[in-house]
Image 1 (tube, rainbow, N blue to C red):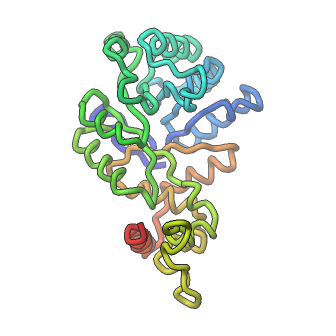
Image 2: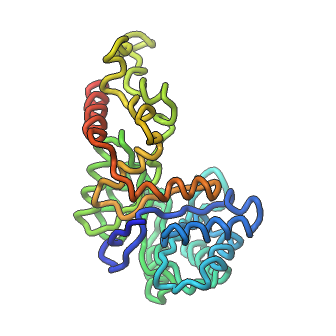
Image 3: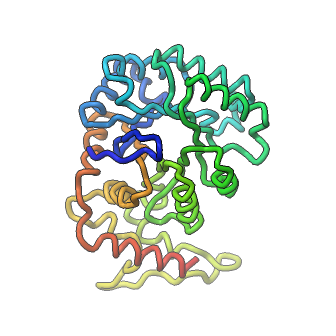
Amino acid sequence: MRYRPFGVSGQAVSALTLSLGARDIAGGPEAGRELIYSALEAGINSYRLETADPVLAEVLGEALKHVDRKLVQVSLTLGAGDGRRGSDRDFSAEGITSAIDRALHASGLGYFDLAILDEPGDHELPQSTLNALKALRATERVRLLGISGDGDVMDTYVSTGAFDVLATPFHVNASWQVRSRLRAARDADMAIFVHGYFPDSLNTAKKAATVHVEKKGFFGFGGAPKPKEGPLAHAGTFAFLHRTNNWSAEAICLAYTLTDPSVSSVMIEASDIERLNTLSQVPDRDMPPGLSAQIEMARVAGAKAA
């Protein structure tokens, strides 16, 4: 496992962050702990709680209790799961403080290295919430603050200088807006966490080969032409993701995100230990020669087709 600087905090974090959610304890707490033990053995020292669920926090805390707390980086996401359709999204001062204190008590970790607010809206963070976040930092229950999302409002939050970390989707076909936001965050000395590195639009050979040619014109007519047949079929597309020897499409996409020096860590989900071990080997592999050029060619073709 390779390690990278975590912004200006002075910490070093593993290139991969294990993201933990309800699915990881669906088979019981022991299954969740075994997954975390395997991550530790693979050299992963960065963990993200997707929610403030006390059971999930307890499982992580139990798995990490014999590890020097200073050697692991633990993040807590607040408001995730699109709570705007549910009841768990509460960005009030009381809601955020209660969620963090509850998760801290259950985990026994002492503090969270990072609290991430998931896709806060334009007016979703009142001054009272900002004051509560400052109080949490002052009492060292939380060391750093972050925001997560890909909407235009993220540009505003990045520009405020109030946050230490940006968590954002980023992949081989990311838009110029996302790439510009990464540069702005880097220039603001923010650490960058990446997720969504293997989007649904590229997860099958057919999708990867046609991602740029399925656009329709007015009333469904026109649009980009169908791909040509023959030796040059699918040239300028992402078809190569599924046709590279000894590399899966997901592994290529993960390796690509790690080529960006501004990325501190990539968040991964692992449904089982075998998948975890497969993904944890990617940071130590070098991308095959020519793949970076193919990715850029496909991106340029996509920009022209847009």
